[in-house]
Length: 303
Ligand code: AMP
Ligand code: FES
Ligand code: ZN
Ligand code: ZN
Image (cartoon, rainbow, N blue to C red; front, side):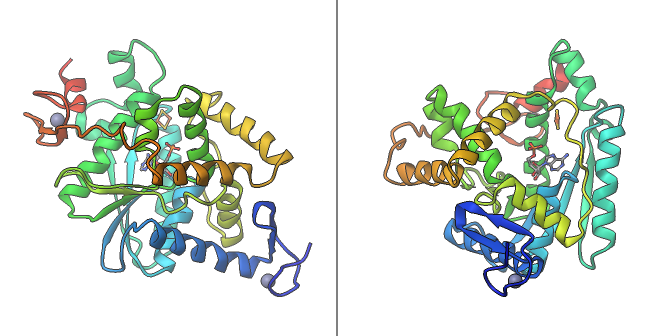
């Protein structure tokens, strides 16, 4: 296989775009595609300050790298969740530290959940969720901390490394149950609905997972290869496998599914579902919440 641009040996063939590229041209193509998504979905502009949520994985580290290469003011946030008695979380943090140490201007902050609030996420799950998997709780904790840090630090947007495979797996789960409320809210950009809630953006939303992985490898970014121990065997992973089988038979199926969903939404498919949620400020922490009194995060620590 040869690069379509220069004829050199290709490192990747992207069948959904009928495009094979060499290492050099692939390393140019990814930032171009990212910039296009940022512009198309009006994610942010050159003067905005972006908080990049970095997990130490391939997607978020590649995203941070691309945003810095594109000249954006992108600072990192790592949330130490205390997973695997620190083992998984500690090694993830090391990858983030190594990434930042190798790049001038790559500043980041760490929020350690246990140090700041008294318990790690698995400990909190054991106490409040009676041993059920901590994933849902973990999502709540991460969202809360991202919002709080973005508000306190005056950032204009929070960027996460969600790729197309992540989005399509969620889309499939939501579609199978026609969860129109979730479908109405699933988008490349979630606008700010309150002065204390920053906009949320996913600049890699049109890139396949194999492309973000290839970018990290070709670019020499070291990342944590293992996924969170609690994610092994998850429903999302099952849907990802199913969708890859579909993609194998029908290249472009994943991208087509997602883009036609966005188009249906643009035409108003779920416009009646959007309910304007009224937001109050939490009595304890002041963060916005739909609940009266305490927000869901503060309630966790009260129990
Ligand atoms: P996941 O929910 O693990 O698929 O991660 C989705 C996105 O959330 C990642 O691409 C990151 O941008 C962000 N993220 C996940 N875990 C963390 C973490 N521990 N600290 C900061 N950001 C995270
Ligand atoms: Fe939160 Fe796995 S990353 S439970
Ligand atoms: Zn080339
Ligand atoms: Zn609160």
